[in-house]
Length: 142
Image 1: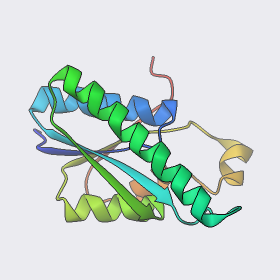
Image 2: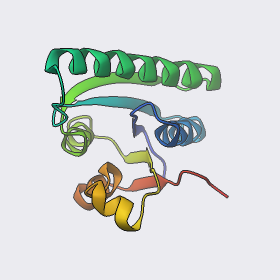
Image 3: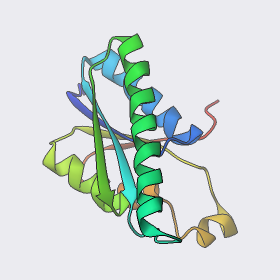
Image 4: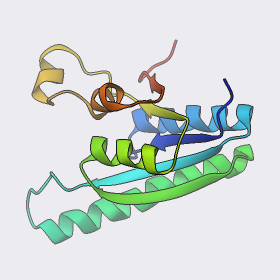
């Protein structure tokens, strides 16, 4: 199945960068536009809220710029998006609004007690809520 619009959520971590890189590979293969999305998590209200948001926005812009550089090097069209809210809800909402064909996300590979402590993963919540295919890229592919 060819894809025209691929969503690649990122939080700037190594696992999410693996997802972005896989989305760029698929964008190259199918001639698709990749939409890189960083969500400032508004549920995380620890400390001085304005400073936290400003720091997350700076981190988000850096993660999106890095994704755009990798996409440009591969000759893939990548559009950058920065939103605020709950990551899973914003990812699903963006996927619907932008009419994307595929979501490609890196996973942190948590399991057992660690997974319970983190209340499931954003990737897991997206998989459960998505009406389109979600490609979950493991932290280490073999």
